[in-house]
Image 1 (cartoon, rainbow, N blue to C red):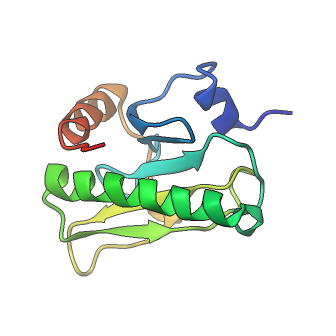
Image 2 (cartoon, rainbow, N blue to C red; image 1 turned 90 degrees about the horizontal axis):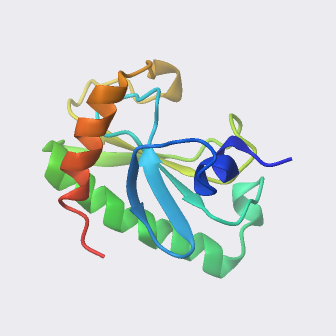
Length: 132
């Protein structure tokens, strides 16, 4: 059975897309830890992050690096952090989370539902800084 991320990749579930190439998709998390919280997923469904092939893993991280630089520019955060937890959805993925304060809580449990209008505006702002 397809994961929610595969359904998003296939266009069955809408998302606020940030960037895409032939192997990866970046989109906003609907329960962001902070403004700009973005998910990076490979288009090939693989449950366990460390079961990704070396080329898949390095490609995912390099794609995420480009998105992180766009997040940095668009949000004026201190830096973009990364979380690879791997338990909430059985599809390998990376969370890119802008960090705005040195005392900011950096945990997926800190995420809260966001309004669709707000996510749309944030996605538009980030996409202006994507350089692929």
